[in-house]
Length: 196
Ligand SMILES: [Fe+2]
Ligand SMILES: [Fe+2]
Image (cartoon, rainbow, N blue to C red; front, side, top):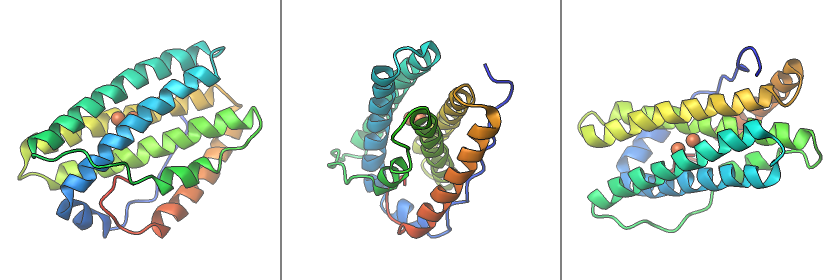
């Protein structure tokens, strides 16, 4: 195990996103269900790709389980609002970030773990914004607050795995590059009723 986590500081979400999200909460909830589903699927795919890394298998197994429980929670919140789940609109944010992953090992694994950490961190930041803004809907705010904490924990899980995958200075330098790419991307994407 590495001694201490890598340092990840995101660009803050622009002020324009939250009003759009709050005005279209059903769309945000549908998108969120799909984000949690894809997080579970991504965790499971790590087990397929890196079976020799016992730490990854253990962490990704727990993660897939937890992300699936988030699918259950967010789907239930959507149901309570009388809304059916919409089709996945795709996720250009995650797709563009994943294009940063190098094709060859060992860079491929390091980049994959760092990109997953970034997606968890951005999700946590935005779920936190929703939790704070929904004081008038306490049950939904409570779900967002709980998921904010969970996604920050997942960020740290991926940062720990990344720190155990490459020398610390190498992992931190690559993370800094990817943080800059993510910041540029999140500024470029339009404000829309999605988690990313
Ligand atoms: Fe989640
Ligand atoms: Fe997560």
